[in-house]
Amino acid sequence: MAAKTKKASKTDLSSLSEQDILRNIEEAEIRLKRMKFSHAITPIDNPMSIRILRRELAQLKTEQRRKQLES
Image 1: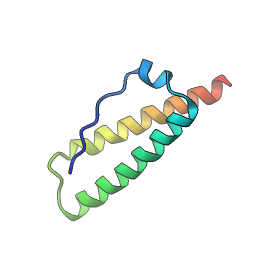
Image 2: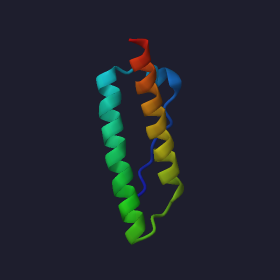
Image 3: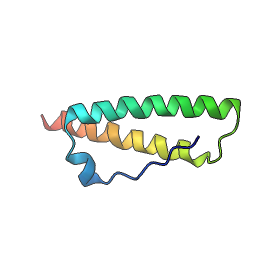
């Protein structure tokens, strides 16, 4: 059930609009909750995917905050 995610670079994130970043944050939070829940019931194949998803979420939130401070 582990979803493979590609690593987003800084240039990819900086080119996104605030609405796109917000949408990506919401989707990542939902995926993280589902992944944690499924891992609690039955261990997932790759538990490192939880860490990867958490880091992706942190990068998105950091970029969102940077854009807020710019405006």
